Length: 183
Image (tube, rainbow, N blue to C red; front, top):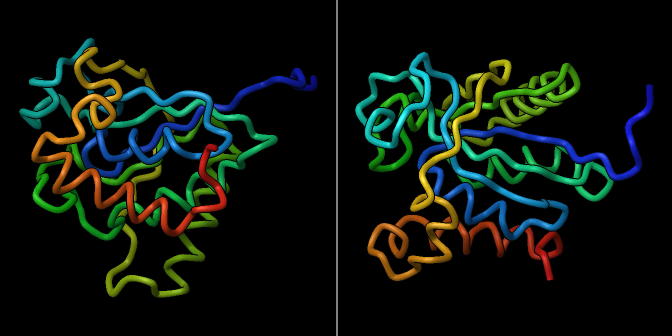
């Protein structure tokens, strides 16, 4: 069975605070939409407070809808591994806890294979002094985050966390991937 011509693909990634990931992927050519949310835990319908407590087991994630004819899953991963540190277990910068873990929640065998190959290649290249600890897990139920967390950076660019953490990641992404930015 072939996919329709306009078929979109879904990717779900965790790499620290979802505000950072959403702000970056919103600017990437081929991305249709990005939603912040939670995945990978046991609690049904978790809230931000539940996830931040570290007891729900969920990670802060972004769920990305993209056009695979314009942007491959591998290209998404290329960006993902540039904008966070995949060698730190359960933290990114000052954000600590399993909710900030590095994870790829794959939606197909092809995504799993692409992720395994990308991680193996990057470990082989020794870009970091430590090995990649990114969790590779089948996608489970996605719980969309509360409205206040959607497009957070776009709505709050002068909030201190956004200025000190999100903006530098967005700037790094734009500099490295200039040719892949939406017009």
